[in-house]
Image 1 (tube, rainbow over the protein chains, first blue to last red):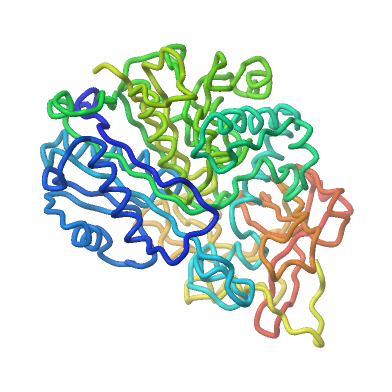
Image 2 (cartoon, chains in turn cyan, orange):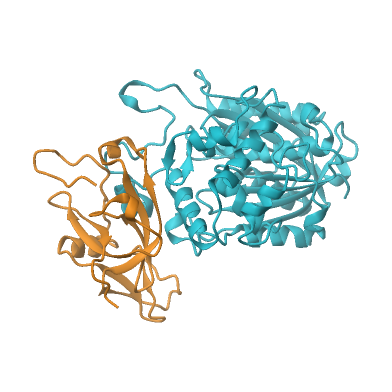
Length: 397
Length: 146
């Protein structure tokens, strides 16, 4: 059984990324953005019979039932998707599988991240507990990584970049160009965090070095936000308000959680995920009109361009240099600005690559609409190049 | 990285070993690097696990290893990755590939951070950070073992 063309995204919603939320609950944000996505599809909540939610601290157990109850839903299928930055793409694939298997017909997939202002003691109330100088839970990470300051994600992507530079070489200017193109896109998206703040390659290279070789402007800024989509059967999709965005291909690959144990730093799990998605969809790389690629760092985009098959291995830098990555260029990449310039709202940041691809394929991207946008490749990346989910979305099934 | 001294209590995150991982930390306190090894495949494993990745019919034994390896990749943190590490900036976080195969994350100590490169030969350096805990760090090998 293939998932090709069986389901479609029919509604999208997003909260504008903000630095901080003032007292909002994650549950409230998850429910609000999900309700907006349902309304965007022209559906009533009663027509939704499936729910997928990201995990969230307020409901460490039974999160799906918590969201179902809050929203007043009545579902035949529910679950948590916990794939880090690949959660959004992973939700769409899981919703499509459940619908195709006949478990349900219409699934709302919701993600949200709140972020409180700094409280006393320098700790953010929304920050992950665990590395506040005290002993933490007995996990491989707390035992074999955090004692060395291997905390957060910056250091891991920096190690990937250094290994890539060692094996293949890429210039700081080539990496910076990715951030600059996405900022250009964000300057055409009033909802982007960095709307109205263009940057140059020089700006990127002159921004502070955080972890060698990554500069500040090559690193996402954590924000709060929320994003949701509604996935339904192709049959039902044709009767709804929005132009359906069909799921044509999906692929997934995971081999590790910590980058320490990745089989390779430069040949990533994206390859297998993307190959599976393209094989299912039966389309070629050159048919893709829009690349919506998870971008926590510039190096992530470079590796994705290679491992998803758009650039030859080792040629990512040359590819970036020889293509115009702006929404109005020859290789439109992350027209919403990507997480680097739209905002990285935790798991909702990863969902933004899905919502943007859907908006573009629906023809609703306004001032940043990609011309002749009929086929999009989406990649979600969780952890430090750990969970990978690739999707191919199209206007026709 | 700053060396611990009795005058300044150690404030960085510490491991909390469990019965499965305890032999690794006990060996480290004795300044030995000890890893699990698969009886079925001969493969060394890190970190210690309750079950072999090669299946339920395998058995994991503990063996001392050389402590030698090379830098698989690294970064120099110019900003602290967590507040407790601010005094150490700049410091090197690296993944070391041991001669026996497994990868370990550690700091590269005892050298100028700017001299660390991919492929740099390193050896284990045991740092007693508290009376109970010794961290397995790595430092450049002055004379290559080859």
